[in-house]
Structure formats: C-alpha cells, structure tokens
Length: 208
Image (spheres, helix red, strand yellow):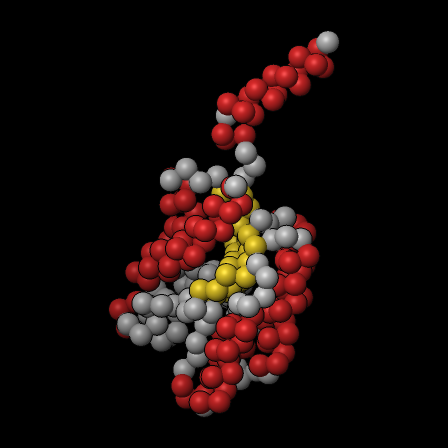
C-alpha cells in the first residue's frame, strides 16, 4: 500500500513540477576559441551563454572540455571518453581552426570531425558544428576545401552548422587580442549571442 501511494505521489509531483524534467547537458568541445584563452573563464562565451540560458529558465548544464591548441586529431583521441563521462544531450563541436592554421591534411581533418559526429549519431546526441574560415594566404584551393568540409559535414543527420563561428568578430580589430588570432573579452558576448541563435532550436527539440 505504501509503495502504491508513493508511486501515485511521484506521478502527481512530476506532472505539477516542470522542473522535474531532466537537465539538458551541453558538451562544448573545442580549442582556444572556446576555452576563454587569455581571459577570465567567467567572461568567456561558454560561461556567458550558460548564465544567460539559466537566467531565462532553461535547465541546462554546460561542460566545457575545450583545450587551447587542440586539433581534430587530438580531439578525436579524447572525444569518446568525454562523451561517456558527461553523457551530453547536445555537443557544440568547435574544432579545425588549428588544423587549418598548421596546413594539416584536410582529408584527416574531415575524417576526424566526421568520426566525432558519428559517435554522437550512435548515441542520439545533437551536434552544433562551429564552422571556421582560415586566412586567404593559405592559398585559394586550400581555403576553399577547408570551408567545404564544414558544409559537407552539415549535411549529415543531426548536425546544425554555424557557418562562421567568428562572424562579426574576426575582421574587427577591436574584438581581437594582440596576437591577431584570438577574440578578446569584448568579443565574447557576440560569440555567445551567435551560438545561442543556433542552439535555441536544438534545446526546444530536446524539451519536446
């Protein structure tokens, strides 16, 4: 009798309390562009976005596993263990910039990113892929093929593409650190707002 009463009470409470719905885990898996390079963690775009979503009543938990200097090859090595450890509902995959800047094999880069996406597909994890561009001095053919990787991967099931992760930031000196590469503190809210626009539909789908 007690067990039956407890079961009924649990059902009623879960119906009346919207906060009983499981939290949405979001794994941010990237490089220095997402690891708050050379700025305070709490002022990086990941923390800013998490705070904003929580303040607007989204029940989310961000896990930032980004590492400065990370490549797609290094990311692939540790990706599966991170997914198993954090059990994300959504993965924001922001890798490839260091591959391009090093002039690495684009075939390898594409294969690495695709493998990470396939790991997510097997687990019904939504992917938000952050597209990147590299400077034109790497040559027209290399830069074109680099850009095309993200466009091709975006055609895979469950992948949403941010066409250019540093949109509105990359070409403006006031938003870039003295190294000429990394976004500064002023740029972080802009990046957070950009990511939010693409993340919101994924959060809505998970809630339905």
